[in-house]
Image (cartoon, rainbow, N blue to C red):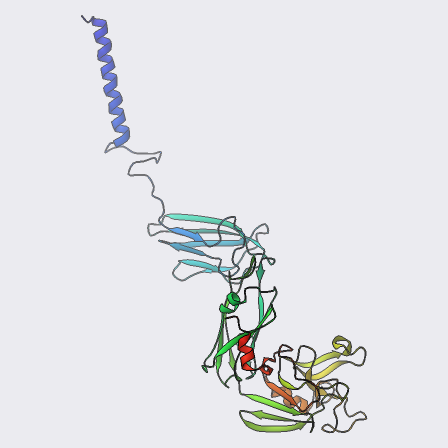
Length: 406
């Protein structure tokens, strides 16, 4: 039999259990009039932004691309991107795309440098998302760059090859060459040739067609050229072939005949190399032009035989020091031009000191392009080596194509 006290306690326990149950139901399901000021759960809690930001260089990564690093967003638009050099706070200029979906730096990044990116975006509901990354670009020790000629947008002569010189030895030549393509609007087949491990030249079988446009696509970013060494270049370069000009120097007659687009436009006297210092034979391409330059014999193995500080109208034909240039000192005790070779291997043209006046050398300088061809024949010297300057035309096409890695 139950006593009154026990019955009362049981009744209170039952009521308490019902109250706890009611509170539990209210806490889980809420009430039509309830508010959730703490923001936890319930229909009034804020939603996460659907915008998803991706920074290409992962936070804490090393070896980031100096070309492809940037920011992208899906399901939203970028509202702000700040990129700085970590530590210094120096801003890196960049631009958001017109549709707000991406951002990239305006200039190529530096190798081996630590950067920081902070980006924000909003979704269609105005909700904000943010992302940050601190990373380091690929180091100089672990990357390679190829310096190349000719320059983008230039107009060059019909003999101008595309020439790369890499700052590291390349062991995977196939991988590197296959990521550089050179095409001409003329439809000429263009093939690459390796001179050693650090130089790669491209040319067609015959000189470029006059007026054609040549486009070079460099897609080396991330390409492994050697063990642990990756490319960092990604760009497109275009140049135009001007008129075709080939000038032939005949050492026997000490004359040069200039032929443009198949027609002879001028024949001029020259002074080739002396009997002791002969001029190379072969097809040589003008690689550089200088209105005036210093020529010091000690830099090319001639000791103190000459040092002329103001050689006028000088155009380089070989990397070893052969030029075609103006000569204002020739007539001092020598026969007129066209009678005798007196140089140390260069081709001289009549000129005056100061690179002024209406002279043969000035005319030829003004009428020449980088990439024009100068052929020397009938010299007692050997034929110039194909890799001495931009002179791969002295190699048979079969040998040229044999030196391709693809």
